[in-house]
Image (cartoon, rainbow, N blue to C red; front, side, top):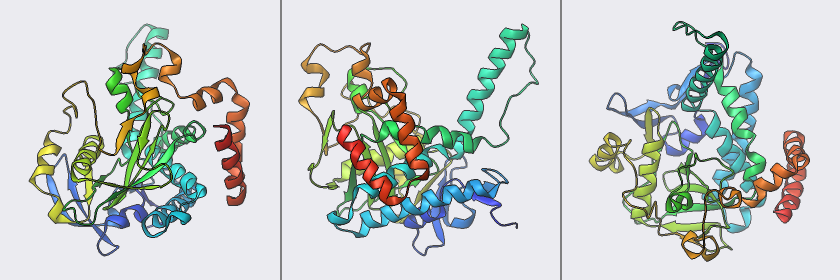
Length: 351
C-alpha cells in the first residue's frame, strides 16, 4: 500500500488511549449491531485517501494531532502546574479539528452542498433533474477547514478536565464522532435555534481516555468546579449521561477499552439513540455544573430574540471587529509555540 493511503478520520494516537495493548480496540458497530472485541487500530475509522491524494494535507493534520495528544498526556499524567495555557490552546485546536474531520461531518457537508446547489439549479433553470448531483471529490478537508474557522470565536471558552473517580465501576466510551456539542442554557430557555459555537452557554465535550474527558464551556453562564483548578471529579450518574450523549452523537461505531463496562444498559441506549435526552423543561443537568445567577433566564426578563442573549460577548466582538478575527487566524497559522502562548495571553486579557 502506498504511504499515507490509509487515512484515519479518528487519529490512531487518540484511539490508543482506549486500547489495552496499543494496537487493538473494542468497537460496537451500531448499524450492524455487532460487537468486535479486538479491532486493529490501523484499520479502524479510516478510508483510502479520505482527505486527498495530496499527502501534505494529512501531514498538516498530523502536526495538529501531535500537539493535542501531548496536551492530553499532560492532562492525564501531569500536575496542575503543567496544565498551561498553551496546552489549553492545543487541546482546543485538536478538538475543533477533530470535530470537522470525521466521516459524519464530511457526509453532512456533502448533503448540504448538494441540496443547496440543486435548489439553486432548480430556481435558475425551472426544472429538476433527478440524475444531477453536486459533490466535492474530497469533502473532509473542507469540513475540517470550516470547523477551524471557529477557533477565534472559541478562545474565550474555559476548560475543565473531567476525571472519573478510581472506585467507580464505569468508564468513558468514545465514538467515530467524538466531539459533542451541547447547550444546557438554550435548553432551559426553550430555544430552538440551531446550535453554533458562538452561542452563549455552549459546551464542547470530548472524552480522551476511559477515565478523562475535556469540556470547554462558557464561564459567563456556568460554574464548573473550582475556578482555580483544571480538574474536577464526577460521579457515576454524570458519566452515564455523558456516555449517552456520546452514543447519540456517534455515526457508525462506539469505541471502548474495557468490555465489562460495555453492558446491556449501553446497548439499550444505543437502540434508543435517536430519542431525546430530556423529558422536561429542566434540560440536561450535571452535578458538577451550575448556572450563574447573572445568566439564569428565570431571574430576569429574557428574550431569545435579543442578540446579546444568543451570542457570547467575545464572538460578537470579533464580528464587529473583523480585523481582530483576521489577526488571530494569521497568528495561529504561522506562529511559534512561544509566540502563540504570548498572543493567547494577550487575547485572554481582552476577553
